[in-house]
Length: 265
Image (tube, rainbow, N blue to C red):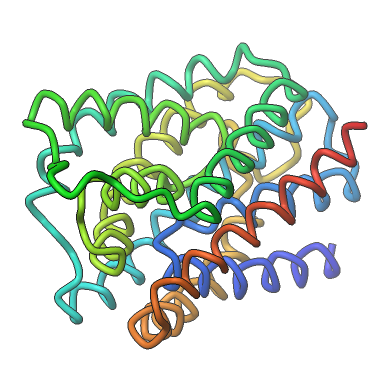
């Protein structure tokens, strides 16, 4: 148990830094790490992926709060975007969490892998939006938000891997997109965590300390480390050049997706 707690603290350090640096909730690190912890501690295989996703979303509530505060102090949060997209985000995430309970752990892993590779390719190829492309109207923003929220609930992320490319494609500056994504991640995390608590409430053979598909001991360990590190990552994001940020993001996605792919094959 001590080793598992130390592992969660280490994961929290990395996830918190990445949350601040790249505008992601850290789920791309947390989900694979928790899968290893759950496998090592003997959690029932059919629940490992769901617990990893639900717990990841719960940690993002706290990590995202620290990250968005740091970015807001730099003036890098577009609150108008947050307001316009939040309703769709919340509905899509909560509904997605209910659907996820019916998707097998293996299929959820494949969704994570495909998603990570697609986003990494988009970042590495540095696909440029049309100079005239703008953010859609409120209805369009909520439709986009619903899609981001639903997919986020299936792979256990705060949505930054989707919302950052979406905003940059609409000509929002990358550093502003990263800061705004941190704020968007909070309603995703709240709705997703609640959804996984509800969908896992009656599940059998969950480990002691679980609240539905949220494992509270891992949540505590990760948050203790990730909360302060999110501020460090946010400060670094405003010092690094944009191309470096994109390459860091893409490299992270490729490594994590490849590791999970190897485990499936």
